[in-house]
Length: 179
Image (spheres, rainbow, N blue to C red):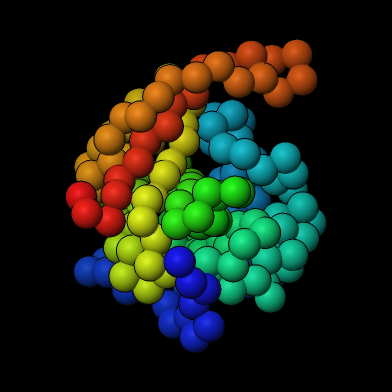
């Protein structure tokens, strides 16, 4: 696997996936702070300053570099920001890229998540030379699971996790470069 030293925005029929910038923080914060959205994603802080700090912490990291996530803002080609996606090499697992995604509830059920994640999976295989692309979701997050299935990922495991005193059930899906 390799890092992308010369990232260029990823385009699809309807979307542009570009590196997130500090100026995106207010918009990303607005939808990630929605309690229903926040319950399904992994950022601890979703206030504008917290989102801005996350974006700034990632800005010098190249996609595919070990050590953490790289966030991309998903922009509708005929409008504004509709969500964000990210990728990160899996710790201690050569060739594995993890992906995550959050779409603003105002733009859900339009196929944007599937289109953006499919583009990110293709990018991980063709540009980063990943062998496996992996995603996680809460077992009750059926819309997210459907996105994983639509982009060709297969169910790998169901597991129990905990965050402090809260216990939850998650699922892991993967797709390999050979299909």
